[in-house]
Amino acid sequence: MQITKDAIAGTLESSDAQIRIAPHSSLEIELNSSVGKQFGDDILATINEVLAQFNVTAAKIIVEDKGALDCVLRARLKAALLRATDETIDWEKVL
Image (cartoon, rainbow, N blue to C red; front, side):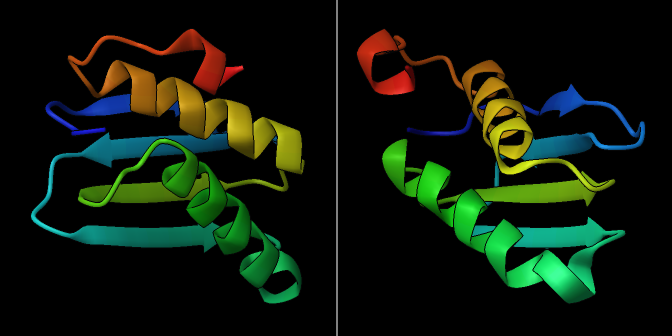
């Protein structure tokens, strides 16, 4: 998937995450998390898994995590990715 425009999903409320995506020449992930010391590696693993599922190899991704569950992180990242591309969406891959 090619990221062609800026997109955002989520909020900065407790137990949520806000994910911002922008076009970039390489893959760059910035994680700011209130639980980063405890779960930072797991959060990055989840992000990288979703990016691999969507074949994203170039984008700037900023994650502002406020203690979101894994399923919330996945949903927010998928929403932001789908908003950031002009490609036709393969809904079977998304679900």
